[in-house]
Amino acid sequence: MLTVNEKDYLLDMVFAVIGEDQAVRNYKSGFNEEAIAVVEQMIEANTSCNENMRKLAKDLLGGSGTLARGWLEKVLKSAKRKVSASWPVEWLTNSKQAK
Image 1 (cartoon, rainbow, N blue to C red):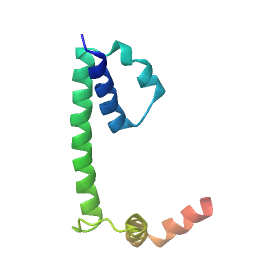
Image 2: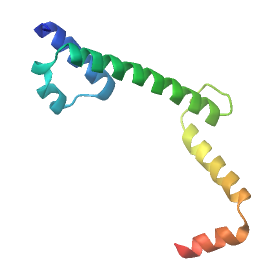
Image 3: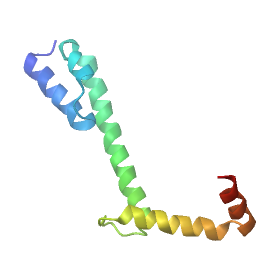
């Protein structure tokens, strides 16, 4: 059985990962050891996800680990140019007419 303080702390940890949510807050009184295991798995998955996002950003930025303001727009424009260059002109013309 978890103490009230332990349940509060566990709820704070959940909110740190997913943000505040009244539906989760409503379940706080039922938090138990199983909830601890679930939150532990959630935090581990979040850590792995964050690492994957860092790798993705690094790959998108061509090895640069710095995310400067406007980086995503530059990557998207670059990707659009690369895709446009790789498709036949008639495909691009047909897809524009279809819109």
